[in-house]
Length: 626
Image (cartoon, rainbow, N blue to C red; front, side):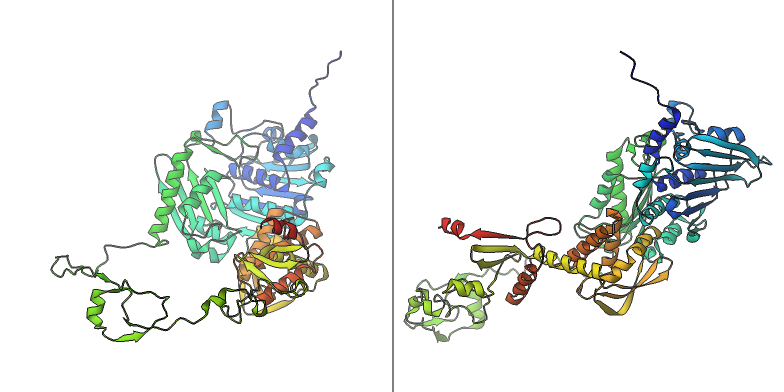
């Protein structure tokens, strides 16, 4: 039997490795910008064309590379960051695996120009699909100039599954924001299709956050700073009143590296317990400084998941630091016992002790006797102190019980089952009708526990979940408006200004026409600011700015590119925001209108997400109960 195991060619092995490191254009931007930071660059320029599919260019003024280093940097596992395995536990740089450039060169056409400050001439290298095309000496500026063209040109399957330009650009901007947030000492610019999206100068950390997320966030942040022998935690946290359901800006960094950490996120939310509504999120920018030997960053190819040696202890420090910051800036209610001018509370001496009141009642009192009698107005249940104080000596005649009161509880079909005398005339609830036909024709509904609508049908009792029913009606309406561009807009008296970071503004521009279709009237003020001049006619009582943020956040989370799918998501999001909530009391007319609109829908039985809206309890099943 012949041998079946063979070594893969380097080009194939590099493409496989590229699948782990280079997932999309944003991965290329991340790797190249991090390498520029490791090279001690002070100015970094990123130029993007067609969301990175056509060209990604990163220019820096760092140390640069020699001719030998420039050629060797494209080999797998070639790195200047580590020499032996123990170096993995004392990392102070961003990149260290030596796979980034090799992986990029395996799936793109790469051109590098680099020069060290001490050299007169630099080096130019061209590589495509891991094959060296040219290498020569050139005159160029100090630092590195990487140009990545036609990403995934030799892996058409990977290129086919890239998302739309809007989605890919949003991912690039998100990665870019994570890097610039931790390096305010470096100046950055970013251009897309010759349009400048970022121009960030060297500033303080707080100003860098403001430059990215807008001036409004400056009033929402509280300072966070604590240092222990184990870890130092700095950064900013949001005030409790700035919480939101979606779109909160949440960032963790450790030793200058962005990370995701659900355990520490729960610690932050625990510190805000009972300060923000359940289900809402708070913005935070938290930076950890810890000994590199206490963490492991080598557990994921993208290096965004990090293990800590003392997670539980850091959890406690983080919670305590956040609570201290909230208390220090009066973000939570507190009682100050040191305030001057506190009222004097006299000491208890017992001199003016009052006796407990005694209870007096008439044991012969019977409310069901028809005989009139004289009773004290406090004769059934009163205190002796009250009698003495008010000196009740008058008497009154007890109203007699109506005669023949037993008839009120006897069935009487002529007077609506004998209930007409005891139910108010405007009571909307009808429990039974004389004729089955008249009941089925009449719009008689009963609301149960503020959630279900009950009504009679020929086959039995129909139970409708009111929130889901309204969701179905609104979804069909908004979807029709999106497809037909017939949304009704209602102008606002005072336009509201809403700010979006660049990564979200790109998504908003992508769904701009759809938002206009459902009734939004927006104006782009530039710099990520937008004016809400009009809103859909049916969102009374909702915050239009918050609704707009939720729509953008949902579009980012779902990442859908097909137009029909975007319409579905927008219609569903709008319907969920506007639909009545469980527990909302409805009049008989409102229930009747809702049921009528529900049965005009093409699919009245299920919500857009496939949940049951109505159920019918058959007559036979009801009879079995008795």
